[in-house]
Length: 270
Image 1: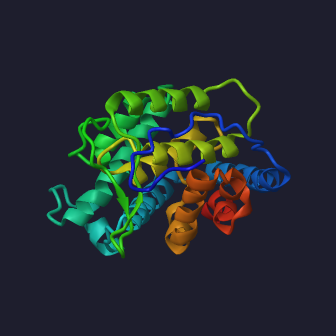
Image 2: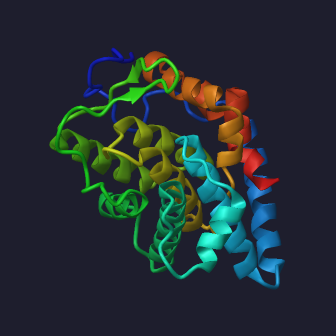
């Protein structure tokens, strides 16, 4: 189980994982999270001017999701840029606005009944990072520690391998099974981040896909999930959870046992 951090993880296992996923610990968290999501969905329907809420939450999620990637802006800068019809000159502001645009693009596609496919992944990633040309075709992509510079993960390499793993991810997402949607979302998020299909923007694209998946499954009507605030506060737990699955196959900790995963399903709803 696991991979050598300095070598491409071409043996990343396909889905579904060959372990018990809906353990008591995981189900307990999923039940609570489903209840909170239902409350959020109900509250959203009662808000008279939903456009104000959506624009505010979407830009905040864009700001914080970008901050996870060390792209830092202020609210004042962002709202001035939104009010200005011209193109902002600050590259960090551009990055955040690209995320916001990608979220809304994906949301409209889901509302038009377009499924979450590799093609849509690529379209979203290309909006998040206009320099991205699609699924990676060349080697050299690494995940490194931002402080030490050490390699912490080397994703799979080779376009054919990446596309095969993405096709497997699609099949898992739309499999006719009884797996709880939130548990499936957490598995999907791990797998997407581990495939790391693009040269840049994988984290932001993956967080957008989480929201779109819940909209598609009717757990949310509007893209108002606010995941990134908690991830920023518990970044170490987040990456340790991902690494625990990769290196020890510790799905239970990722899905529900760790403090990060508990909040991952609940904190955005505060």
